[in-house]
Image (tube, rainbow, N blue to C red):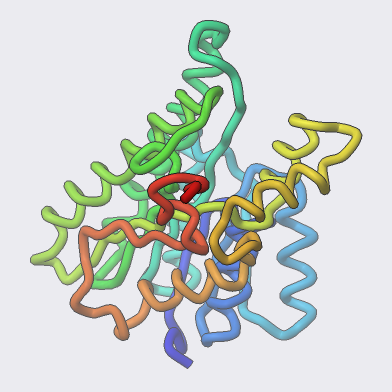
Length: 259
């Protein structure tokens, strides 16, 4: 088990990508603390505890700096150290730039950027070596669609955050990397599909899959496996990088070529 006895904090770990990461971490021997704003955090924690995993959950809005500090300190006091931080929590609301109100823009910035900043700032004093993994996206750094300006901006910013932080922390033995997922089958993707076509969300997802060279969306477990690799000593010479996991969706130069 590559993460045996390591203590990991995972934000947004109650469902979706975060849950995939949590499950893989637990299987790899880690003790996991979940920070999540969704009420489902309690059910998720109890379900995993029933499987005899060492996991605790805290319902918290990562925009609330004081509460974040309180819970991170509580986690440290419980376990005596924090080895891994996964900044997974994030939001996405599709709306065109011209129609977007400032409060929607600020919602993205406050959660995706400032929330990640808050949790990292609170956790660093309790990390002695270890690994920080930030969940960015291919959206922003590499590609974008209409309606994604706010989301894309924040996810691109996380790449800069990752690189700057990696440069500062390398001498402390803390590695910082980012993961850039393409389409992973999560509740967020399902919600976007329903917004696109409420009568046929499955058709929307099938259409997405057809645009991916592997002809499918990724699984949360596949994302969890990559995250566990970056959290472990198996990736000990990797820092400051953005790793793409997208089934090849950003690979084609064009969607189709006629000859």
